[in-house]
Image (cartoon, rainbow, N blue to C red; front, side, top):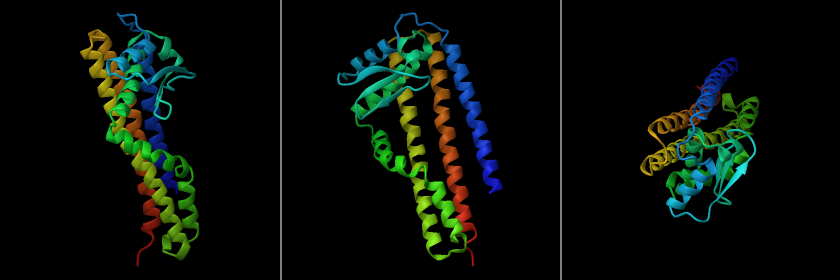
Length: 232
């Protein structure tokens, strides 16, 4: 168990460093004002229009870095700073979230798979570790009866969460690529603004990468606890 705490601590540290760097990047690029004078909301609305999407609404949502696309009600939700601001960071985030709307409109396969897993992961992710621990307490590591099967059920739940994390990676990277391509091809940003937008989205993507690695590491650790002691 001590090894698990070391593992989780190391991943948490890396995650904190990446998140801290991301916030600094956004602060930096928030100071680069767009030459076209458009707000994040206006950037989003134009990108949707340029892709022929008319059934998605761009709305403001409270908080910081709370930006997301909701496929259920077809809304691009931009945090207040992104929605109202007119800088490179706001342009990057707004275009990225619209990238998800474009994925949805074009039935992007990775997004479809991710959406299909949402109901499962929302139910199982919070309890998976406790199910595995419960199985171990019932004798799973020794291959004893019901404990073993309980632990396997917990690992399966954890496996879905890990799969979800890795499927999220191409979804996020593709949305960023779509955003950057549109910003560049439509001449929405200057070279300096583009570099800032690209760097901000790169660090945002790394938060998902760290989360995926953490999920895999956790799954492998608990799998080792269950199967490692089950030897003849």
